[in-house]
Image 1 (cartoon, rainbow, N blue to C red):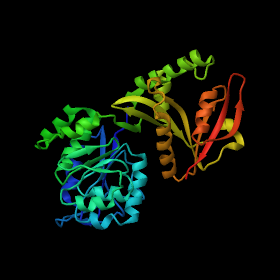
Image 2: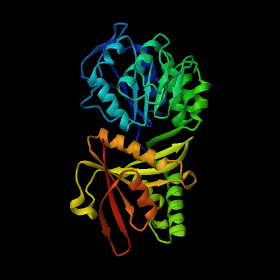
Image 3: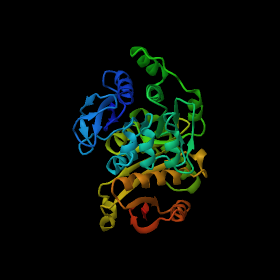
Length: 369
């Protein structure tokens, strides 16, 4: 059975109570009795913080012992203008966001995302009274969007002020489990969901997202690998992957046992890959600990030439860097000259070759700057 997604709600001094409580309750009520979401609070330390309105709350976890979040909620409040200059908090947000499926800022939580360097090239929004501050700290290529309840950039979802956090949280629930689930949650908390059609339209406009693979992705992932295996065999004249090896049982175990990710375009899975950290026996002494190993990388044939592979590798590089590693590694069928040329063109350095009785592979590495 697929595990529940971890939903971490950040807390700090002078945070706004509704910025915390609104999304917390939405995900809690939407959790299918805890089967789909596990919601908890986290602070820099496990000690009480006081909200803007004077309520004292004790976070369940600290940055040091917090379970790895799949969804991170970054609330706002008067204290955000101080907290955005707390490098411990912004660094933790940046590191946590690298492996999270979704990061949701509420209100002036946007200021913390800006300081965590997460808004490059995105559509951003915040509380109507904080746009002046946000304009000063966002990257030049970010687009500030006013008069919306929320905006969706794929991984990064941002809401306007306070109660707009309810709307954005319900939107995320709908994105993951369908609108019916979100409407049911809104009914339970007797809240009128203000759906933002502008954001919904943007979600359908060439949205590229990389997220962790789920068990219910198996059919689409199988189709990707089978298509790739068949194409290589027909067009290149050799077998890189055996078609019959990509059974649903194998791919289910693959998702369960490895860190597997999918790349999605407009909701369609168009790429798949894993990132591994363990010793790869075939490379012998060429193995080293200071690297993440991109494995089983595949992209849908109809997206050939659109740069999807390089976007996946760029995302992987950031993910590996945030895990404290200094090198990105991958291997490639030695008999596929086009793919070898492609990796060399992206700056990868050939490190070695492995020969078996049936196939051979090249190992490539690229240092992470």
